[in-house]
Structures are given as C-alpha cells and as structure tokens.
Length: 263
Image (cartoon, rainbow, N blue to C red; front, top):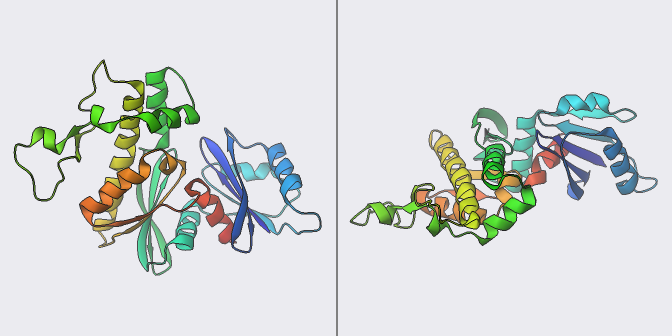
C-alpha cells in the first residue's frame, strides 16, 4: 500500500493506493498537519497491512520534512500529473492541464513528460473574485450558486454582436465574458459567469498549447474542473476546436494518485 499526498497551496489531497486501486480519498483545507496524516493512517491502513511509503508531491512538498516514522518519496508535481493522466488517457501524445490554485501544462509524448508552461489563472483567482463579490464564502457556497446560474444573463454571445452567422463560430458562443453583467444580475448568474470565464479561458489556453505540437488530446485535472457546468463548458470547446477533453473521475485527487503511481 502507498499513500499519495498532494500538498497544494489551498488544500491537501490524500489517497490510499493498493496496486492500482485508489481509495480513502480525502481533502484537507488549509496547510498540511502531521497529526491528520497519522490519524488517516490509523483509520485506513488495515491491521497487518504494510504501508510501503508515502509519496509526496505539490508546491508544499517541503512539508514532508514534518513526517516522521515513515518512508517518504518526493515526486515532482509535473511527473505526478503526467503519470495520473497516463492512468486515464491511452493516447500516445496528449497534454495534461492541472487546474489547481493556478494552472500548469505538461506535454506527454510516448511516455516522455515535459512541462511546457502554465498560467496564474486558476481556482485561486476564481475564489478570490467570488469572495470579493460575495464578501466571503467558501467552496461549497460557490458551487451552490454556480449550479443555479444562467450564463445567458451575464455573457455577451457571438449572436449578440454579429449581424450574420459566422461559419466557424456558433451564435451562442461567448464573445465577451461578463459582457451582459448589470446591477440587476443575480449572484447565481454572476458566479456562473466567473466559473465560465476561468474554465473557458484555461480551456482555450490548453487548446493553443496543444496546437503548437499538433496535439488534440487533453486531460484536465484539479478540483476546479468539478464545478457545476464545467462539462458543458468543455464540451463547447471540444465542438468548437475539434479536440478531445478527458476529465477523469475524481480529478481533484489525480495528482496524489499520480504521485503514488510514480513510486
């Protein structure tokens, strides 16, 4: 058995990997705390079972120095993302976008992984904008409001600005994010507009990153891609650009799974 530990900026993700089966998935908000790890081990490692090691990745992996009494293996985050994506994508060439607090892009070509860039845009900017508008609130509050929102009430579409139909652009595609935003717009609509703005633009960046390499297969990881309407946003991008996007089951835990698979 191997524990995969993804120490992110805003949250810690932890999984238990037995062979290639991941279980006991948990998210701990905030910074890493060794006592939570010890409680996790006591609660989830069966009596008599052997914990081979703890695979640690993420920007907070330096915190692994706080872990004592266990074998620790530090895994490069980009390698962990690539390994996780290979777990669900069987294409020879693809790009994995890890959308956490910020976003990173890794190209995988016949098993060789290379970090090709990233963006400061991600779940961190989304949450900050949400909290500024709503004067507080957390992840679940954001999810609840976005679920009820209507994008047509906040985005200007291609149909709004073009007198004639364009051959390559559907009329309901966003022309201006939040272009219809008014004082009368509901919080639900505004929050969904923010979600769409962040995910749509990251999706476009992902496509452009792949275009430079002739790649049309993409894997998206991270908690941000689990937000309401995310699948609709990505499906629109697939149809618009002729690409294929994979969002795996439990995308928020895939980096931790990739770390464990890298051992």
